[in-house]
Length: 178
Image (cartoon, rainbow, N blue to C red):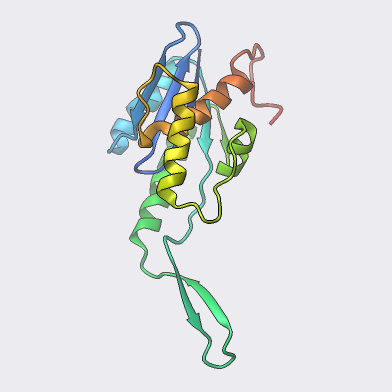
């Protein structure tokens, strides 16, 4: 049996712990749908419990402007966002493959898995690079013998949570209480 986690971003990754051998495996997100399918098929063969980071389509940027009639500040998503479309498509492919392969999974929002893992929220003035390096450092602390990159840090942290939640599960459906 394995406990696995998926960070669905194109620059995300996959991670799992083989509970029988104690080995940890990480992989940058495969580039093609076929390669993703092959990686997920391996999870099915190994009887995996998976946490998929829940993502929802969101704009890649926000523009700020003054409303000419009221003078009020307005915020609107940037139009023509290729990045948002690509991300949503990739996330949908992952969900679809998990369902089609009949691999059980639970989705967790980033704030929920981080809170359950004891990871502090991102600071308001903290830059994204600082935040990602903080998460990488936390993953390195929890997996000292594993090579941790920015691509797999989130997946490793979710994997540790998956192991804590489901690693000792003896029931047929460990997700039934979630």
